[in-house]
Length: 99
Image 1 (tube, helix red, strand yellow):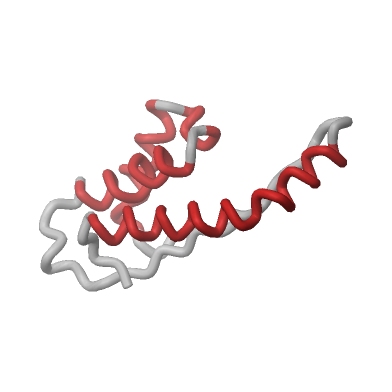
Image 2: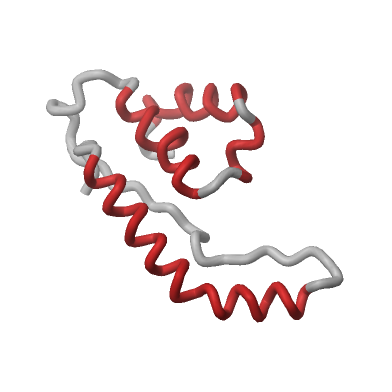
């Protein structure tokens, strides 16, 4: 993590709710990025940072319904891209020090 001051806040969010990583992406965005940044206080003086979120478009398949799930993932790629753009807009609306 290149923003070490966020680590305790993110760790705390995960400890409070270990299932957060299975929640909707919008919930994860708020709990794991927006709220930890806001808990740092003076954001105006903080240099801009880059946050990379990987794997938003991936589906992990571990069941006997693999084919059906893969097909559904393929159909949903367009929706996933739209949702990712909406998440980015949400993140920008909070005016965090992000590039």
